Image (cartoon, rainbow, N blue to C red):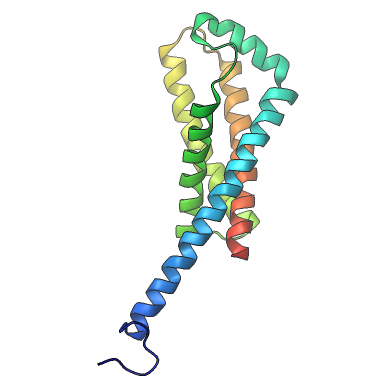
Length: 157
């Protein structure tokens, strides 16, 4: 027997939990998509256009370790993965504003890139301090912008 106002035999608290879960999933999906677009196209503008000469110099230093043209499928998967991670953190930590998302994503991106570049610096002889600095600063700025957009999108859903 169901009580008045119940849907499909669910109690009022279970209905609220389902509604909140659907709202979180919608925020997560739309924020991930927004972050992906910012990171993908922002990375192209930042690293492919604005820092093109530096990137060409860095790629030349890598020699045969670097591809002449990037493969887009792994790049898309990587951008989706970082966008999903950042969006999940933004939604779960309720940083649903441009500033809140930007600050959280900047910190997370900064720590991930410092870890990665530190590992690269310790492992590969072509890695230089200049490469690391450009990578950390560029990706942190890109992460902050994407996080801001993701936080803003999450606030509108």
